Image (cartoon, rainbow, N blue to C red):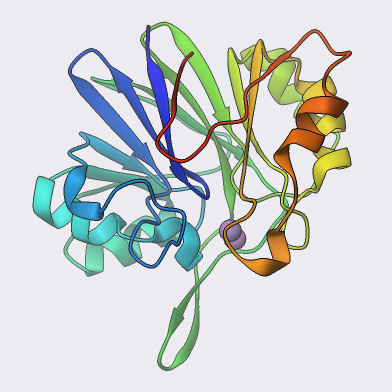
Length: 228
Ligand code: NI
Ligand code: MN
């Protein structure tokens, strides 16, 4: 059984046996980070998009551990140019690795890399469908609500959906409830809230609004784990 450990914001460490996969490793500079970038030793790093609160420490962790960064083409090429080991993909494409399978799905957001000379195009923002240890996890990345989440649910029957609830930059609580109803995962975990003032919301309000749904809602504190 894989477990997911919430490391704060949108960062999750998915562990299956003696291997782990890291998603959106924003640890340095994250006031809610449950560990440092030196504490993790993943075989791969999955990135939903290029914004700093998702790309985070990915390149440094890849350089230290050799972990392969799996990302949409333009972001993967940027990371490769910075010295990381990468595997580029596109929205709708799936690839099997020796530790699991990744498919990128759409997300309604933006994606860019902030540099001293301005913004670099980061490719399409994505949601991540990760199948590992016989379980399927849908990490929605940063996104607004869209009705094709129903299609993602129908195609992949996620055991766990990890959805942003912090509003302002992504879905808020009421849209995340609607998303969960469309996706129909077995379990749902909220993310992307409480890290900075504009995304301060009460995750227990999400849990309360999910109470009459047949989906288990788990609000994780940074550092807490859940069996998928
Ligand atoms: Ni973003
Ligand atoms: Mn974000």
